Length: 388
Image 1 (cartoon, rainbow, N blue to C red):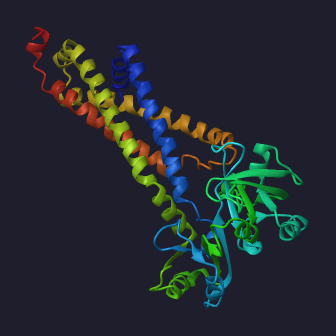
Image 2 (cartoon, one colour):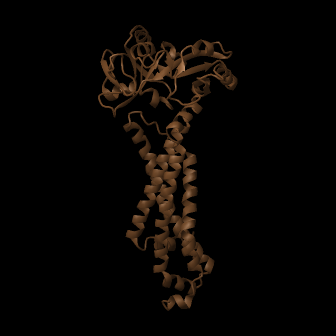
Image 3 (tube, rainbow, N blue to C red):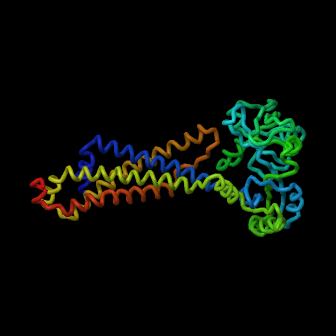
């Protein structure tokens, strides 16, 4: 630490170059913080206390394959099953195909399995009694300024009605409020419509179910219940895979895209580029100070001292930029989550992310500084002072 002033002075000897390199490092670790939050968000999906008691049963082949409605009674008869319901993906869009809405056709008892979704008793009754009724998430209603009593036109990107039109109309009968602050972003964006109305109106469903949701009496028996449910359709043309809510969500996302692979690939490319950029900065910095390093050796600095000072300069450069980048990410994540209207529910940069970031800062700093530090240590005083 007693040579920190020398390291600091060397680092900012060329202020413009150092500043531009710091901006690159800040951008890299800002991206790291944001992408790690996205990865963590998908990893945490379905990890709530209520989610641990729910199982999802879908087609073993693909999440787009449907299942027969007749399985409901068979699943309900499995020992350990408390309640069962089902749903279909509707694929709705509002006004413009780009304004996608998380819309699902569900059974009236769907909300019984999701205690974290709160709906008033009168609104719940209205939903059951209104054929074209719809329940809308709080944030979704706020985004489009919907209210109870509004007639909402939705365009299904998948299902036409019996006349061949993909334009559907629904009556908002209630607003859903999420009581789970951790996973509530998704629930607050949902649009629920009647499964029976959906099934009777489109000719492309005909008693088919997208997936079943089961609430188990004992979460410790979930694995046994899942195996029993899958045994119902074994060796049939509609074999199923029953998983916990977390595993089902992860599996569904992997069929769309491998989030972990995407995040890892992007960060690998970013940090590889950062390695080359900061490495070039350190090589130039040490090359310009060849004479100064020779003077330090002349007045008594050992080879190891020179090596340590160059490595410290490299690590300090990465630490300054990395801390600033993660700090900005910590401030930016709540803003991004709020601006998305609940579509993104990104967790804060946690201790694990800070620890991993710190390790990366030090590791990249050591890698970047190793070659120029080695050259500085082996520097010949006579040759350096002679400009050779």
